[in-house]
Amino acid sequence: MPDGYLRYLAAVERFLREAGDADRQEAVAAAAAAIAGAIAAGRRVRVFGSSHAGLLAQDLVYRAGGLAPLDAVLPAELMLNVRPITRTSDLERQPGLGCQIFERIALDPGDVLILISVSGRNPATVEAAEVAQERGATVVALTSLAYSREVSARGTRRLFETADIVIDLPGVIGDACVPVGGTGVVAGPTSSAVGTAMLHGLCVEVAELLAARGIAPPVYRSANLDAGDAANRHLFREYAGRVDYLG
Image (cartoon, rainbow, N blue to C red; front, side, top):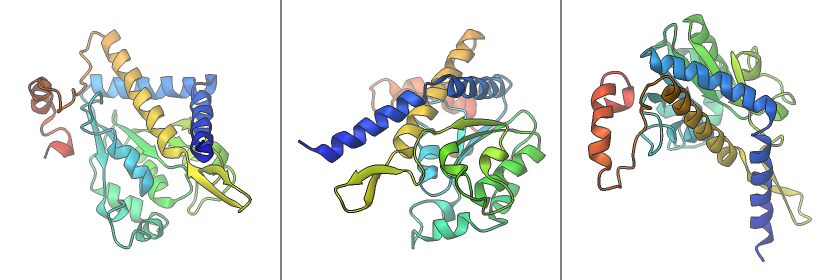
């Protein structure tokens, strides 16, 4: 029996159940209302995370079943294909980099910026929140309160102390949660699995709110379905020039 595998799945299942508690439902509802309002008004909805959190941001963009208006901010120096990869850790701690990145990103009143950071302690993401708020955008954070409250800010504040709406990502301090034998090693990070599920659930809720307003949810179909490309063309036309990922 693959015990470690099963213990990891059990941990993810436990955290996914926590993701549905009353406090998190309330935060998701508030975030979904802000995002749906922005989409309905033709405003921007951007998403950003550095290093592994950037994977969650990328997974929301041009995604089967995902929302066409979501646009990821993907600075090359903070993505996992940079070499050496340890540079991402160094740079996300560097004061001023978040401001520098978001100085060139369009954000205005009525826009929404979704920020993803498990620890919430690094300046890059916090500065992104501050720039967005200065421009009148609403900031939604997905961050682990259990983790973030146990570490100090590497800048002036932590992300949960900065964002307008905070969605608490269930997990443990340090992310990895499965003890390995008697080695003292703990393996199995859960933030990607749980965070991705929460973000896609948030997008489904946004689609529901848009439908309730009588707005056809701008959701992509899989490009690997025979009719997928034809179904998506109207979204390409609608959002060309409005989202960076379409050029």
